[in-house]
Length: 201
Picture 1 (tube, rainbow, N blue to C red):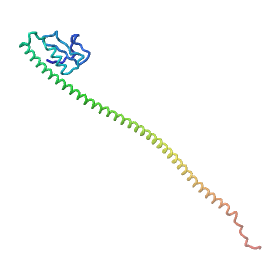
Picture 2: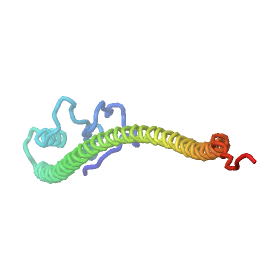
Picture 3: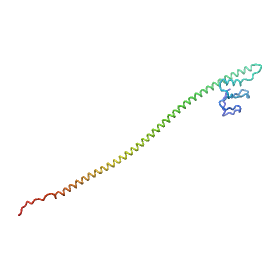
Picture 4: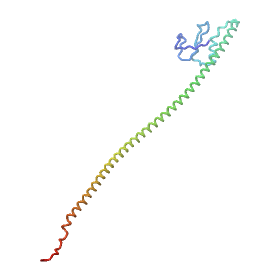
């Protein structure tokens, strides 16, 4: 029987404590005193696991040779090894699936980073464009104010010109009337006296 132990939820004896995960613990049936853990110095692989399990499952052989019980125990060990090989194959398939998922996540993470960098560049460009538009808007507002001020000055100048033209026309009329009056007053004084046509009596 193969089972997974969650060390965060199960307390193990001190002799089975380990400094790293994953690790393999072996608990032989009806031989609790022969329980052991996979050597830390050995690499976890199928051959090493089979050697470890085969060594732990093999009971001491009697000196007289192999008996029927020994053959039966050997068959059981072979069945256990076959079962363990299947479990190991399943674990390898799960590990491969995890590696594939990790590769997909790394690809998605790379795409996300590229998209984030692209968005940052676009945001920077938009900020620069907005700053340029604000500068243009400021210049446009300043130019509009200058044109409005110039238009107001021209309007006042036009009003003043119209006033001057009106005053000039009025002065011309007054001068014309004054000249006519002057001419009328000086006309009789300059005419010669009439001659006396009557003789002496």
